[in-house]
Amino acid sequence: MTGLRNGCIKTFALFLTAVAMAFLAAASAQAASVKEIFEKYHLFGTFSYDCTKPADKKNLYFVNRAIDADHVQRDIMSGTITRDYIVIYDKVEELKPNEIRVTGVLDGEPAEGVYRIEQNRMLQWYSKVNGKENIRDGIFLATNYKLPYLNRCGD
Image (cartoon, rainbow, N blue to C red; front, side, top):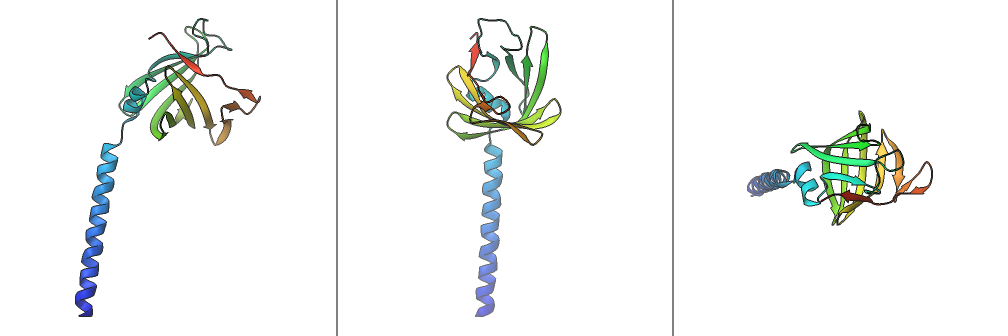
């Protein structure tokens, strides 16, 4: 009787393991791509603190475009042809409605950030580059400067 019970328990455990693996595989297969999440929140295009002024060191322009389904490039511009930084995002996850976490590389260094998103604008809420936190709760830590929203420029 004990052998039969142990055999049933092992069979049931294998069944549960198989169900869990199938569930995890289905969940990861259904995960939205980086491109899909950027599209969902209308994050492709150009953003700036003040779209009525040209790009400069105090009014950066942020240009987001898809490289492929799994990579988005963000150029941070201080002039029409002056790119100060390049960010490649390779992972995006939705933390809660209208808030995403992005990870990738900024000029070759590991980077992560959190954006709070409203219609036609976004706020960088958190940032860490190469293990060093530089933005927390929307404040640039080096200067204690409260970051303004980035507004969508154009349509």
